[in-house]
Image (cartoon, rainbow, N blue to C red; front, top):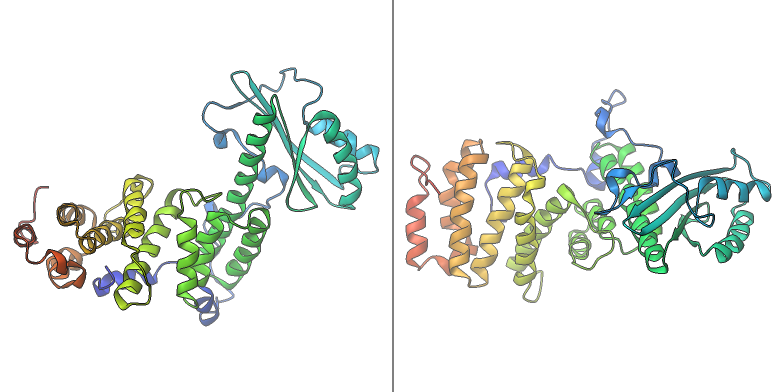
Length: 375
């Protein structure tokens, strides 16, 4: 799809601004503030701790009046520990949760230490050994994650889960700031992303957003970040719309660089796997006809057809091409796309492996914008 219509290129330029762009287009002093839903939280311990909507399947918050074992992690226990070594509510902030799934119980807290973190950490270490608490820094000795579980396995699992949630929180906040498309937003995004990376350097969501920061200045490095972000076993992977968007960008670059010889090796199987996942998850997108996310879905479908064609999967490529045509008629209101789809398919070099097949010739006959196909 690297030879898409000029209109599609225009749409892509409306996406997020990369570093070079941020420098070229200085925001005016009277620039509009971001929409209400994009206002960034302070990201204190309260912002980082899990909420009921975050919990893994089957888990729920414990009722506030539930009696818990004396050894659990709790706000009271941590504050008492802090007071005992000279802290108060001005220098120590704790946000805790107790969650349960059947017979499994876990309690966790995120602690912000505003002064002399080493003193509190020493006291916490001793308490953790006694109560079998698990302690981890969230990117800084001034922010600690403390977890207790009814079993060692539960404690370890919940520690890893809340740690990943903290990474997601910071990285998604960085993405929100990046979408403001301003110098201040770009700077804030870098700081938030740095915080997420300090917690988990290999986080997929960090690589996903880092790829956009590098997109204009270092496209090859940007692609490397995206490919890492989309691996199946990567910690803290991108989620929802961001994942689909990254798949779109990565596949587009992979097809382009392979076509020009800039990317060596057979990357088509990897490209196909990325796009298959993106198409399967496009329900997270807003597919309002003519909207930007509808174009992402179109691009992923068309790129998948291109990839199948290059892999020699003729029937799969033809099937996806026809599905993409049906999709375009329904979701792309810009007349140029529908009018020129047949021309695009007939002239794209990615389609060369298909052009001598009867299925391809029959398909081109169907791509008439006046009659289309019923799908």
